[in-house]
Length: 357
Image (cartoon, rainbow, N blue to C red):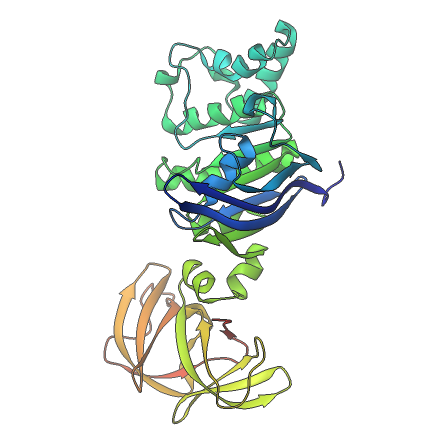
Protein backbone atom coordinates (compact mmCIF):
# COMPACT_ATOMS: atom_id res chain seq x y z
CA UNK A 1 0.00 0.00 0.00
CA UNK A 2 1.30 3.47 -0.90
CA UNK A 3 2.48 5.94 1.68
CA UNK A 4 -0.03 8.50 2.97
CA UNK A 5 -2.86 6.02 2.50
CA UNK A 6 -4.81 5.25 5.69
CA UNK A 7 -3.42 2.37 7.71
CA UNK A 8 -5.78 2.83 10.67
CA UNK A 9 -8.96 4.86 10.90
CA UNK A 10 -10.94 5.48 14.07
CA UNK A 11 -14.38 6.88 13.27
CA UNK A 12 -16.45 8.37 16.07
CA UNK A 13 -15.01 5.95 18.61
CA UNK A 14 -16.23 6.05 22.21
CA UNK A 15 -15.39 3.73 25.05
CA UNK A 16 -17.32 3.66 28.31
CA UNK A 17 -16.18 1.30 31.06
CA UNK A 18 -18.45 -0.15 33.76
CA UNK A 19 -19.46 2.53 36.22
CA UNK A 20 -19.87 5.11 33.48
CA UNK A 21 -16.18 5.98 33.09
CA UNK A 22 -15.88 7.49 29.60
CA UNK A 23 -12.30 6.80 28.47
CA UNK A 24 -12.86 7.92 24.87
CA UNK A 25 -15.42 10.41 23.66
CA UNK A 26 -16.24 10.41 19.92
CA UNK A 27 -12.62 10.15 18.77
CA UNK A 28 -11.82 10.22 15.06
CA UNK A 29 -8.28 9.94 13.70
CA UNK A 30 -6.54 8.65 10.57
CA UNK A 31 -3.07 7.12 10.89
CA UNK A 32 -1.23 6.90 7.60
CA UNK A 33 0.64 3.99 6.11
CA UNK A 34 4.35 3.88 7.03
CA UNK A 35 4.26 6.76 9.52
CA UNK A 36 5.45 7.07 13.08
CA UNK A 37 2.30 8.31 14.83
CA UNK A 38 2.25 9.19 18.51
CA UNK A 39 -0.66 9.40 20.97
CA UNK A 40 0.51 11.90 23.57
CA UNK A 41 -1.16 12.96 26.79
CA UNK A 42 -1.26 12.67 30.58
CA UNK A 43 -2.29 9.55 32.47
CA UNK A 44 -5.99 8.80 32.05
CA UNK A 45 -6.40 10.77 28.82
CA UNK A 46 -7.49 7.71 26.79
CA UNK A 47 -4.37 7.10 24.72
CA UNK A 48 -3.74 3.53 25.94
CA UNK A 49 -7.44 2.71 25.63
CA UNK A 50 -7.35 3.71 21.96
CA UNK A 51 -4.27 1.54 21.46
CA UNK A 52 -5.99 -1.42 23.11
CA UNK A 53 -9.03 -0.98 20.87
CA UNK A 54 -6.79 -1.17 17.81
CA UNK A 55 -5.07 -4.26 19.22
CA UNK A 56 -8.39 -5.95 20.03
CA UNK A 57 -7.85 -6.11 23.80
CA UNK A 58 -10.93 -3.90 24.30
CA UNK A 59 -14.10 -3.33 22.28
CA UNK A 60 -15.66 -0.02 21.29
CA UNK A 61 -18.86 1.25 22.91
CA UNK A 62 -19.60 3.24 19.75
CA UNK A 63 -17.89 3.95 16.44
CA UNK A 64 -15.66 1.79 14.30
CA UNK A 65 -11.98 1.04 13.74
CA UNK A 66 -10.71 0.18 10.27
CA UNK A 67 -7.40 -1.36 9.24
CA UNK A 68 -6.56 -0.64 5.60
CA UNK A 69 -10.21 0.18 4.99
CA UNK A 70 -11.67 -2.95 6.62
CA UNK A 71 -13.59 -2.98 9.90
CA UNK A 72 -11.69 -5.16 12.39
CA UNK A 73 -14.07 -5.18 15.38
CA UNK A 74 -15.00 -8.81 14.71
CA UNK A 75 -11.40 -10.02 14.66
CA UNK A 76 -9.79 -11.38 17.85
CA UNK A 77 -6.34 -10.00 18.74
CA UNK A 78 -4.44 -12.98 17.30
CA UNK A 79 -6.16 -12.57 13.93
CA UNK A 80 -5.27 -8.90 13.50
CA UNK A 81 -2.09 -8.07 11.53
CA UNK A 82 -0.81 -5.95 14.40
CA UNK A 83 1.63 -6.56 17.23
CA UNK A 84 2.10 -4.78 20.55
CA UNK A 85 5.20 -3.88 22.56
CA UNK A 86 4.42 -3.14 26.19
CA UNK A 87 6.16 -1.10 28.88
CA UNK A 88 7.14 -4.32 30.63
CA UNK A 89 8.86 -6.60 28.18
CA UNK A 90 6.91 -9.81 28.98
CA UNK A 91 9.73 -12.06 27.77
CA UNK A 92 9.57 -15.75 28.65
CA UNK A 93 12.36 -16.26 31.22
CA UNK A 94 12.81 -19.98 30.46
CA UNK A 95 13.35 -19.37 26.73
CA UNK A 96 16.45 -18.13 24.94
CA UNK A 97 16.39 -14.83 23.13
CA UNK A 98 16.02 -16.62 19.78
CA UNK A 99 13.12 -18.71 21.05
CA UNK A 100 11.43 -15.62 22.47
CA UNK A 101 11.71 -13.83 19.13
CA UNK A 102 10.39 -16.83 17.21
CA UNK A 103 7.52 -17.60 19.59
CA UNK A 104 4.80 -15.81 17.62
CA UNK A 105 5.89 -17.43 14.38
CA UNK A 106 5.75 -20.89 15.96
CA UNK A 107 2.21 -20.14 17.11
CA UNK A 108 1.39 -19.31 13.48
CA UNK A 109 2.69 -22.72 12.37
CA UNK A 110 5.60 -21.38 10.31
CA UNK A 111 8.32 -23.77 9.19
CA UNK A 112 11.60 -24.03 11.06
CA UNK A 113 13.50 -22.42 8.17
CA UNK A 114 11.05 -19.50 8.01
CA UNK A 115 11.28 -18.98 11.76
CA UNK A 116 15.07 -19.10 11.76
CA UNK A 117 15.34 -16.60 8.92
CA UNK A 118 12.85 -14.18 10.52
CA UNK A 119 14.53 -14.46 13.92
CA UNK A 120 17.98 -13.70 12.49
CA UNK A 121 16.64 -10.76 10.45
CA UNK A 122 14.78 -9.32 13.44
CA UNK A 123 17.73 -9.68 15.82
CA UNK A 124 19.97 -8.00 13.24
CA UNK A 125 17.53 -5.08 13.01
CA UNK A 126 17.82 -4.43 16.74
CA UNK A 127 21.58 -5.13 16.85
CA UNK A 128 21.20 -8.27 18.99
CA UNK A 129 22.41 -10.99 16.58
CA UNK A 130 25.09 -12.31 18.94
CA UNK A 131 22.67 -12.70 21.88
CA UNK A 132 20.33 -15.35 20.46
CA UNK A 133 21.51 -18.09 22.83
CA UNK A 134 21.19 -16.03 26.01
CA UNK A 135 18.24 -15.93 28.37
CA UNK A 136 16.45 -12.69 29.37
CA UNK A 137 18.00 -12.78 32.86
CA UNK A 138 21.45 -12.45 31.23
CA UNK A 139 20.50 -9.18 29.48
CA UNK A 140 20.33 -5.56 30.58
CA UNK A 141 17.04 -3.69 30.56
CA UNK A 142 17.85 -2.03 27.25
CA UNK A 143 18.79 -5.35 25.67
CA UNK A 144 15.58 -6.95 26.90
CA UNK A 145 13.62 -4.11 25.32
CA UNK A 146 15.41 -4.69 22.01
CA UNK A 147 14.43 -8.35 22.17
CA UNK A 148 10.81 -7.34 22.78
CA UNK A 149 10.98 -5.15 19.65
CA UNK A 150 12.51 -8.02 17.66
CA UNK A 151 9.79 -10.43 18.79
CA UNK A 152 7.07 -7.97 17.77
CA UNK A 153 8.72 -7.34 14.38
CA UNK A 154 9.46 -10.97 13.49
CA UNK A 155 6.01 -11.72 11.99
CA UNK A 156 6.27 -8.45 10.01
CA UNK A 157 2.97 -6.96 11.24
CA UNK A 158 1.27 -4.27 9.20
CA UNK A 159 1.06 -2.09 12.32
CA UNK A 160 3.22 -2.06 15.45
CA UNK A 161 1.61 -0.70 18.61
CA UNK A 162 3.98 0.58 21.31
CA UNK A 163 2.60 1.27 24.78
CA UNK A 164 5.18 3.46 26.59
CA UNK A 165 7.93 0.94 25.74
CA UNK A 166 10.82 3.17 26.90
CA UNK A 167 9.47 4.39 30.23
CA UNK A 168 11.20 1.67 32.28
CA UNK A 169 14.65 2.63 30.96
CA UNK A 170 17.02 5.15 32.50
CA UNK A 171 17.35 8.59 30.89
CA UNK A 172 20.53 8.03 28.85
CA UNK A 173 19.34 4.69 27.50
CA UNK A 174 15.89 6.09 26.79
CA UNK A 175 17.41 8.90 24.73
CA UNK A 176 19.57 6.46 22.76
CA UNK A 177 16.61 4.15 22.12
CA UNK A 178 14.54 7.00 20.68
CA UNK A 179 16.93 7.35 17.78
CA UNK A 180 17.16 3.59 17.29
CA UNK A 181 13.39 3.18 17.33
CA UNK A 182 12.86 5.88 14.71
CA UNK A 183 15.57 4.28 12.53
CA UNK A 184 13.87 0.90 12.99
CA UNK A 185 10.58 2.32 11.79
CA UNK A 186 12.18 3.81 8.68
CA UNK A 187 14.05 0.60 7.85
CA UNK A 188 11.02 -1.68 8.20
CA UNK A 189 8.42 0.68 6.70
CA UNK A 190 5.91 -0.58 9.28
CA UNK A 191 3.32 1.83 10.66
CA UNK A 192 4.23 2.59 14.28
CA UNK A 193 1.61 3.82 16.75
CA UNK A 194 3.42 5.00 19.86
CA UNK A 195 1.83 5.89 23.21
CA UNK A 196 3.66 8.17 25.64
CA UNK A 197 3.19 10.91 28.21
CA UNK A 198 6.71 12.19 27.49
CA UNK A 199 6.56 15.25 25.25
CA UNK A 200 10.26 15.02 24.33
CA UNK A 201 9.82 11.45 23.10
CA UNK A 202 6.88 12.54 20.97
CA UNK A 203 8.65 15.56 19.48
CA UNK A 204 11.88 13.73 18.63
CA UNK A 205 10.46 10.58 17.03
CA UNK A 206 7.07 11.31 15.49
CA UNK A 207 5.95 12.14 11.99
CA UNK A 208 2.68 13.32 13.54
CA UNK A 209 1.32 13.64 17.06
CA UNK A 210 -2.21 13.49 18.45
CA UNK A 211 -2.39 15.35 21.76
CA UNK A 212 -5.14 13.88 23.96
CA UNK A 213 -6.95 15.04 27.09
CA UNK A 214 -10.02 13.71 28.89
CA UNK A 215 -10.88 11.19 26.17
CA UNK A 216 -10.68 13.67 23.30
CA UNK A 217 -8.07 14.59 20.71
CA UNK A 218 -7.10 18.23 21.20
CA UNK A 219 -4.78 18.64 18.20
CA UNK A 220 -3.14 16.55 15.49
CA UNK A 221 -0.09 17.72 13.60
CA UNK A 222 3.62 17.46 12.91
CA UNK A 223 5.87 18.10 15.92
CA UNK A 224 6.76 21.57 14.62
CA UNK A 225 3.09 22.51 14.26
CA UNK A 226 2.14 21.16 17.68
CA UNK A 227 4.97 23.03 19.40
CA UNK A 228 4.90 26.30 17.45
CA UNK A 229 1.15 26.63 16.87
CA UNK A 230 -0.81 25.06 19.76
CA UNK A 231 -4.55 25.43 19.23
CA UNK A 232 -5.55 25.81 22.86
CA UNK A 233 -4.34 26.30 26.42
CA UNK A 234 -4.03 22.58 27.16
CA UNK A 235 -1.76 21.83 24.19
CA UNK A 236 0.40 24.91 24.81
CA UNK A 237 0.78 23.99 28.48
CA UNK A 238 1.40 20.27 27.98
CA UNK A 239 4.02 20.63 25.23
CA UNK A 240 7.12 22.37 26.52
CA UNK A 241 7.44 25.41 28.79
CA UNK A 242 5.02 28.22 28.10
CA UNK A 243 4.14 31.67 29.36
CA UNK A 244 0.46 32.58 29.29
CA UNK A 245 -0.22 36.29 29.06
CA UNK A 246 -3.67 37.92 29.01
CA UNK A 247 -4.65 41.32 27.69
CA UNK A 248 -7.14 43.16 25.52
CA UNK A 249 -7.04 43.62 21.77
CA UNK A 250 -6.04 47.23 21.12
CA UNK A 251 -5.45 47.03 17.38
CA UNK A 252 -6.56 44.74 14.54
CA UNK A 253 -5.21 44.96 10.99
CA UNK A 254 -6.30 42.03 8.86
CA UNK A 255 -5.02 38.91 10.62
CA UNK A 256 -2.51 40.87 12.70
CA UNK A 257 -3.39 42.18 16.12
CA UNK A 258 -1.91 43.98 19.12
CA UNK A 259 -2.59 42.80 22.65
CA UNK A 260 -2.22 45.42 25.38
CA UNK A 261 -1.30 43.88 28.72
CA UNK A 262 -0.64 47.08 30.67
CA UNK A 263 0.60 50.62 30.05
CA UNK A 264 3.59 50.38 27.76
CA UNK A 265 3.31 46.60 27.43
CA UNK A 266 1.94 45.48 24.09
CA UNK A 267 2.40 42.13 22.34
CA UNK A 268 2.00 41.67 18.59
CA UNK A 269 0.27 38.47 17.51
CA UNK A 270 -2.05 36.98 14.90
CA UNK A 271 -5.77 36.49 15.28
CA UNK A 272 -7.12 33.04 16.08
CA UNK A 273 -10.86 33.13 15.42
CA UNK A 274 -13.32 36.03 15.20
CA UNK A 275 -12.42 38.85 17.58
CA UNK A 276 -13.11 42.55 17.96
CA UNK A 277 -11.32 45.44 19.61
CA UNK A 278 -11.47 45.29 23.39
CA UNK A 279 -11.84 41.50 23.57
CA UNK A 280 -9.89 39.85 26.36
CA UNK A 281 -7.63 37.14 24.93
CA UNK A 282 -4.67 35.03 25.98
CA UNK A 283 -1.45 34.25 24.14
CA UNK A 284 1.14 31.51 24.61
CA UNK A 285 4.74 32.66 24.58
CA UNK A 286 7.66 30.21 24.61
CA UNK A 287 10.55 31.18 26.95
CA UNK A 288 13.19 30.79 24.23
CA UNK A 289 11.38 33.31 21.99
CA UNK A 290 12.01 36.18 24.44
CA UNK A 291 15.31 38.07 24.32
CA UNK A 292 17.00 39.84 27.23
CA UNK A 293 19.39 42.77 27.03
CA UNK A 294 17.53 44.59 24.29
CA UNK A 295 14.01 45.81 23.60
CA UNK A 296 11.64 48.50 24.80
CA UNK A 297 10.15 46.59 27.74
CA UNK A 298 11.79 46.90 31.13
CA UNK A 299 11.90 44.18 33.75
CA UNK A 300 13.80 42.80 36.71
CA UNK A 301 15.32 39.34 37.17
CA UNK A 302 13.31 37.73 39.97
CA UNK A 303 15.05 34.35 39.76
CA UNK A 304 17.87 32.73 37.77
CA UNK A 305 18.17 28.93 37.46
CA UNK A 306 21.33 27.54 35.85
CA UNK A 307 20.63 24.63 33.45
CA UNK A 308 24.03 24.04 31.88
CA UNK A 309 23.59 25.10 28.27
CA UNK A 310 21.15 27.84 29.26
CA UNK A 311 19.78 29.77 32.22
CA UNK A 312 16.08 29.93 33.02
CA UNK A 313 15.07 33.39 34.22
CA UNK A 314 11.87 34.59 35.86
CA UNK A 315 11.47 38.21 34.79
CA UNK A 316 9.08 40.58 36.55
CA UNK A 317 7.59 42.96 33.98
CA UNK A 318 5.37 44.77 36.47
CA UNK A 319 1.58 44.93 36.56
CA UNK A 320 1.61 41.43 38.06
CA UNK A 321 3.18 39.86 34.96
CA UNK A 322 6.14 37.50 35.40
CA UNK A 323 7.49 35.65 32.36
CA UNK A 324 9.98 32.82 32.04
CA UNK A 325 12.90 33.33 29.66
CA UNK A 326 15.41 30.72 28.48
CA UNK A 327 18.72 32.34 27.55
CA UNK A 328 21.78 30.56 26.13
CA UNK A 329 24.73 30.85 28.47
CA UNK A 330 27.88 32.80 27.66
CA UNK A 331 31.07 31.19 26.33
CA UNK A 332 32.31 30.93 29.92
CA UNK A 333 29.28 28.81 30.74
CA UNK A 334 27.78 31.46 33.02
CA UNK A 335 24.43 33.18 32.65
CA UNK A 336 24.33 36.78 31.46
CA UNK A 337 22.26 38.13 34.36
CA UNK A 338 21.82 37.72 38.11
CA UNK A 339 18.85 37.95 40.43
CA UNK A 340 17.89 41.59 40.94
CA UNK A 341 19.33 42.86 37.65
CA UNK A 342 17.29 45.37 35.67
CA UNK A 343 16.95 44.16 32.07
CA UNK A 344 15.49 45.19 28.74
CA UNK A 345 13.09 42.66 27.26
CA UNK A 346 12.19 42.04 23.62
CA UNK A 347 9.18 39.99 22.51
CA UNK A 348 9.50 39.75 18.71
CA UNK A 349 6.48 40.14 16.47
CA UNK A 350 5.03 36.69 15.78
CA UNK A 351 6.52 35.07 18.87
CA UNK A 352 3.19 34.93 20.72
CA UNK A 353 0.38 32.56 19.65
CA UNK A 354 -3.20 33.55 20.37
CA UNK A 355 -5.15 30.68 21.91
CA UNK A 356 -8.64 29.52 21.12
CA UNK A 357 -9.51 29.12 24.79
